[in-house]
Image (cartoon, rainbow, N blue to C red; front, side):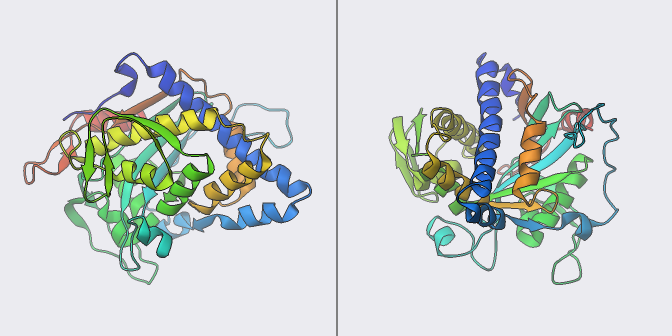
Length: 352
């Protein structure tokens, strides 16, 4: 198995990048709509949506023993409040970290544990007109650094352990510390979306239509679908995102492929949904988005999220590249993978 650059496959890089560009613009519209609601007749909505967002003070927890921030020169601006233009690295996780009945019914974590099922490093170049999104397979064996615990003390360094164990043992702080250790890149921000929030988002958008190339019967995700086109509700879409058994080689790389298919379908649904002409649906979508988020303290308000979205407005459709970290089967366990060097190291160095 090797790293894959989706821009080089099937000649559909423009369409994929275009959908990602549309979702950035749509996210901005959702947040802008939330602010309009806050400033208008439903001022309570702004405070509700703002209060939805949970945050973790990752910078304070990790201190100064981290990779240096990228040094960039801001573009000149005559505005009193210029938008940021420097390069940016964001760790995006999809997890079952939120407890409660909804997540348990959807296969989420319990009060005794949690996992990060999806991990992407989103690198935005200086000027914010180009971007690279790197998926990290959760089954990758890594060296997990010592991580501070919220209860006090710290974890031991662990060698040859699964990547997603970092979140399980130390939450967002350890996930960020592990990604920074593996990549040598400072994560400027952290964004996490949970199980029930993702399902609510899909339902708020009216579901998604997905075409599967083969039958799916996964006992773990509880999804059964025949090959063909299906309109999925939130619970079914989440099950598809979690499916790995019986698909491809049964590895996390197969799951990543399904997640990419689902993202395409979700972006298609977003692009055809007239959110700004339907205030009720707009609010449901905004409530689902903000209610499912955990961020670092630098993105824990609607205004900060909207500022980020506005700073990405110059990101053109042909300037977004998606890749999977180069990996090969682990010698110690063929069901696990390790970084394929030197290719993986070269990829991370190109993003510093």
